[in-house]
Image (cartoon, rainbow, N blue to C red; front, side):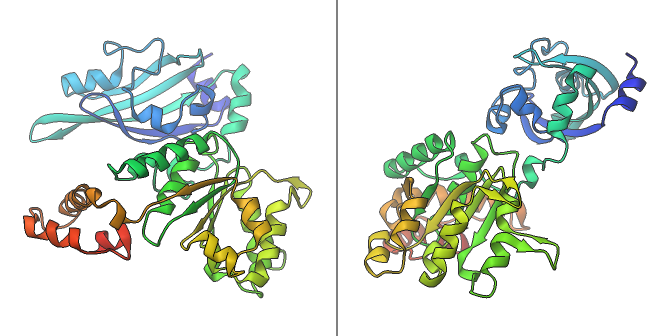
Amino acid sequence: MELQQFAQAFSEFDNVLITDDKGCAIFYDLADLNILLEIGLTPDEFFQSTVTDNYQNLSPETSTVFQVIQTGQPVLYYEQQLTTLNGFSYLSLSSTYPIMEHGKVIGAIEFSKHFYETKQIKYLDNFLGHKLYRDNHTTYRLEDYITTNAEMKTQLEKARRSAQKSAPVLLTGETGTGKDIIAQGIHNESERYTKPFITLNCSTLTEDNIFTQLYGSDNEAKSGKLQEANGGTLFIDHLNLLDISLQAKLLHAVDIKVLNGEPLDIRYITTVNEDVDKLLAEKRLREDLFYRLNVLQIDLPPLRLRKEDIPIILDFYIQFYNEHTLQKNVSYRNEVIQLFYAYHWPGNVRELKSV
């Protein structure tokens, strides 16, 4: 079948891949992201390998990316049949360019289109309509959580294990401990990563708006959080700030399995920033709602209990701001670290970042 016939018969997917000088992906805007599911990869696995590692018939000698990196010359409009490790095959049309800095090749950028045979049309049905990975409303992966603390590493491992399940997760921890990073990381390491990660902020819910927030509004043609999160994750943030009188309505919503005649498949991740036992004892948290949302519990320790993380967090943000501001050589003296060790950080990592 000719390339032109492929283009006429099937939807066209435009992709952008950026690699470093070793051929490892550092950015991939993949129009048909679900192809990663079909070939058995997660985004994390993809970014931890070179572009040739995931294909049976691709080597440094046959890869356009490696050819461009080695020669510094672009390869334009190159047709190539690619076969993944599990046998999925498709035709790729690509143009690849070197990324240069001071006359040296530091990476490559490849623009490509994928074309599929008739027998693969079922894959296209899966690909269409899904959001891009970078547009599933998340920013973080679990590996973005900065720590050397043993207890925090234990909690991160619990988060990784929980990503392989669909049971509700309760994240506890003070404000600024990074519960949003963990929540997004669980979503992005699960099979739901191609689906939306939708946030329901309990601090904004009132008697007047909770129904619309959850179920939407026909009058305004507005979808609710349940519909938006279907197939993905609903992140229920700051549950402890939801008035006890409204918690029964949230419980009812969480228990719904069908909405507007359509089955609901939602993974719930919830946060509280106060002590759970105290919330229950003071009747500010319904026990039935708590047990419904607390199948798996992950507890994030405050920064004052993992002060060994202060230097690496400080180094990370100094490097970040050096790269993103005009002040390129910001550093700190040892006295700063000593002051930071002595401080109790009520705002935790978020406060340290602001400082």
